[in-house]
Image (cartoon, rainbow, N blue to C red):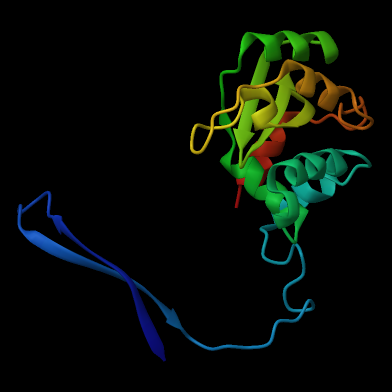
Amino acid sequence: METEITKKKVLECPHCKGLVEVVMGTEIVHLQRYSEAMYGSLMDLAPSQQSVIELIEQPGLMKSFAESVRFVLGDESPKSIERYFATFLRTVQLETIPRFALDLFLKELTPHGKFQFWISRGVGAVVIGNVLRAFVPVELVLGTPARSTATPANPTQLKNWLNAEGRKLTADQQLAFSQVRKLANSV
C-alpha cells in the first residue's frame, strides 16, 4: 500500500550523541465504506469501559455532561457523547480553582467531604467526598486562556449555569468518582 511521510525530525541520540533522523508516517492499508453496524457507538470500547457507560446512562447524568460539552465545543460536538465521556474519565486531571468558585460549589452542592475539581477537554467535574456532584464548563470557573484575549471567570455566569434545571446531579445520579475512573481506565 501507500505510505505517507507526515513528519521528519533530526535529534541527538542521548546514548551515542550522534544525530538520528526520526521519520513518522501513516500507512493506508485499505479503504472501506463506513457502516454503523460495523462501528457502533460503543463497539471499540473495552468491556469495562462499556460498563461505565451503562452505569452512567442514568437519566440526567449524561445529559448534564453533554450540556457542558456543547457549551465548550459548540457546533463541533462529538458524534458519540458516550465515547467522549469515557475519554474524559481516562484523561481528567486535578485542578486548583479560584476561591469564588470553591465558595459557590460548597454553598450550592451541599458538601460532605473533600472537595476536588477534575478537568479534561474543557469540562470540569465537581467531586465532593468522592461523589460526582456536577459538570461545568472549565471557562466558567477559570476564565478563557490568554491565546487570543484572556477573559476572567464570571461568578454570576457560573452561578446561573449551576442553578439551571438539571445541572446539579440529584442523589440518584451521583456516582463514586474514583470507582468510575478506575473502571474507565481498566482495559
